[in-house]
Length: 90
Image (cartoon, rainbow, N blue to C red; front, side, top):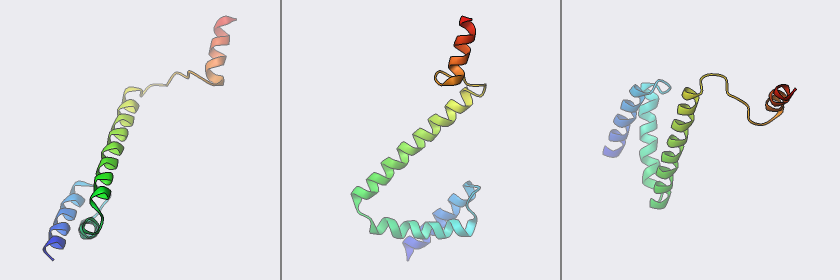
C-alpha cells in the first residue's frame, strides 16, 4: 500500500515535468510501474536500465547531430552526389 502511494506521488511529479503525460495518468503510471518493478527479476531490471541509458544516449547524439547540421546536408553517395561530381568534371 505504501509503495503504491509513493509510486503515485513519483508518477504525479514526473507528469508535471513532462508535457505528454497528465497528472492523473502520471499517478496511474507510477502505480503500474511499482507493480511491474516488484514482479520482474533483477537481471530484467538491469537490462531495462541499460537499455534506457543506451536509448537516451543515442537520442541525445542524434539530436545534437541535427542541431549541428541544421543547414543542407552534403550527399556523399547516391545520384545527387554523382551529378555534382560529373558537373565539375565537365
